[in-house]
Length: 295
Picture: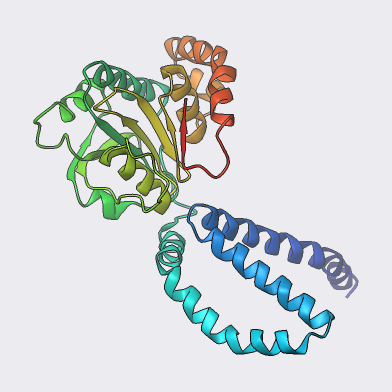
């Protein structure tokens, strides 16, 4: 029984730490989901009501307590109705997230092919939408397009987005290191503070990042500006070096690991490393609370 008592004693010491750690992790994940929607306002409002209730309880403000107790059921129903879209998004994300889903990320050469295609289409003033899924399953988006399952190449991507092509108005999904589908339809953003000059492509890119953790690469058909959307924000008119660095970072592909694939990839990685500080600076200057960051 000696070893059993030792384990029990050790568990008694670890139990509070484990309890707090799991609770902190759950709070962090819930906050992350709320931050991607406008439901964060709901949390702030609920926190304010709880604070008012606590003050009324401590100071024994009986009239205010009576009013709050009368209003509480109605407030809960009103919150559920007003924030129904945000609550629905949170539930959808919880249901679609696949924690243990293995996903083969695009290697450095494939990212270069995508960025080269973006550069070509930008010069030609052709619009482009490329989606890089991460943990959230976007099978519902893939099913709206045409299955391709092809190798990633700049030629193929440029061909897909050529003007008057049957697939140029939709989005291309790159999954498991291949072009999974093209011509996919995306949900539009429901945010109210989007810049009016932005068209459907940018709104669709932002809407996709509101409902998933995907990264979306956008080329504007009007200006040729290349942008990145992720975590319910869109970073407008980035340079090619900035796009390369941020994509590599967001898709969990470390520079050193990718550079070991070939000598050419190593040279490309060293060039982008030099631009890393410049690339991160404009992104770090994003104005808090804004959905759009424009340089």
